[in-house]
Length: 400
Image (cartoon, rainbow, N blue to C red; front, side, top):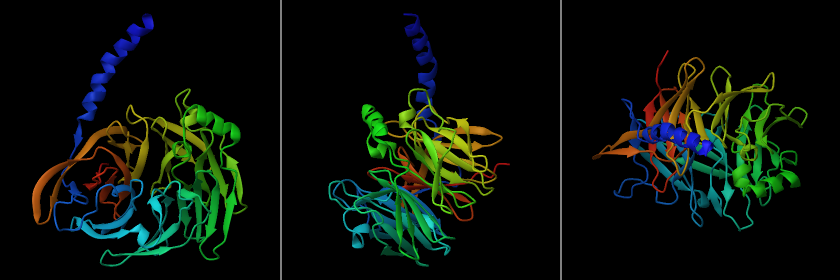
């Protein structure tokens, strides 16, 4: 009885605060939404059920996006002009690679400023594997797409990054969780078992009703020395050193709430301009800082009272922006600064005024899965993860 009273008091205190936060809107001066998916015009738009923006990057004036589709449909690649505030190109992935479902790895850049790479996930039950794709953005924002092949037969590419100095890709595949390297110059692929869950780990995941897409790390990061970091079972960070092709496991675990270790995995990484590395744990939506020299983790806490931090990107003057929370709750935009700490900025709501279509809709982003920073650092771009997804853009705050 005593515990019930305590829990009731906690609910009375916190539930109104959580409910209030759901209706706190972030709409700074200079923000706007780019109409990308409403099929109400002859202008260029993405069709429904294929436009969830799961990967974003920026090349000059153009935002480059990759989407996830619903089962049986093909994902899309698109560009949008920041200055013109409209889509400039849409390309179907199956024009080049058949049988794929999503592009969830994000984009990594080559040395050339308009050349990017991503990995794909195949349709379930087809026996197909994910492919590495190369994308070149023309001066007009058109997309030139090339298939670089299937690095691991029959396995999707769940997370991937690229080191342009070594011309080498590093990835984690689905559903096995194995790690691969692929050399762009030689075409040689190496596959490693060290990141795959053991039989005991899989039994633990089964007891929590978790599938590979629920426990495999969603992102990889390369540090200043060229080492690759990601998450593996259970609630651990691994480090792969390409110099000697060796793996190590960090002593510090991902920050977690007791009893929820099995759900711990990397949701997103970001490397700031000064080299500071931040990561997030999906299970409880906790932000942490990684010290690659000491191989240690500092838990920075939770921006909001919900799980997930699916995307992060640098702002100005050491500011980090991220999106916390996910379905069935609303996404919250937050910022973090080493001296100022967290700010819950609430739910982004930007005016959508397409040139020539002056409807002036206040577009609210409920589910957001991807973020990017413009090349000059002036804008932060958000990609929705909805049936009808729009790009949402706001000026990076120039706070001291």
